[in-house]
Length: 248
Image (cartoon, rainbow, N blue to C red; front, side, top):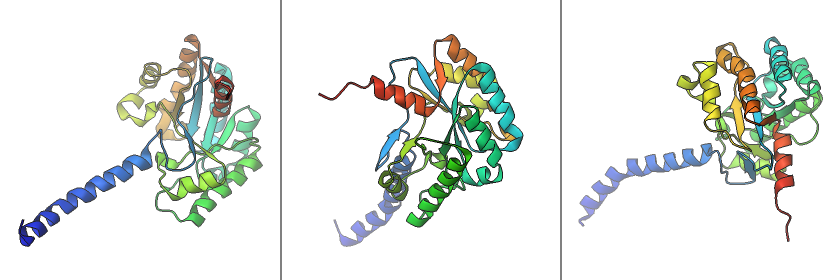
């Protein structure tokens, strides 16, 4: 092939190659079941019919009592992945969640995308939030969930080096506008996909998430009616460890 033709072909194909590379990077960064370093879980394999309910963002003083009440009334425990900045503004809300028997997880300090963040920035985002979670009363492991599910190189390397586990999810009903339009739509979406070991994510904290809040009670009742227990990530992963075959 003549050099001029080769050069034209290269120029023509370069944008396609760049787009494919970016798409591949995005797929790796947002994967729910894979990260380049360290431990990631998106579901588990317990013996019992057990699922984890996870509630992201917040906390906020305006919503915390109603969330605690609905979970207590319907007999469920949850893991709350909180942002450090909001927890710093509402420390009593975090303490109330722990006192009610719930688990607190780390959702970074600012809820920023964690792809192009320096190692020092990753450390600040995680460690500042961990300190606030401990001050609120969280004991035992602190699970980590990246904002928007994005992680690539620097974040997973830091998580691995500090022994942290990334907790993703397997069912995300309120991430789809047509599903989240009604509480019934959220419940139906979960029931069509749930199985023992599922990790369910909801975002109930803000005024715009009314249907997510209203879905919690009916969702828990529906899961109970199908024989599921609704618990924290820690309880689910502990049950999965007990169910794992012993090494020979």
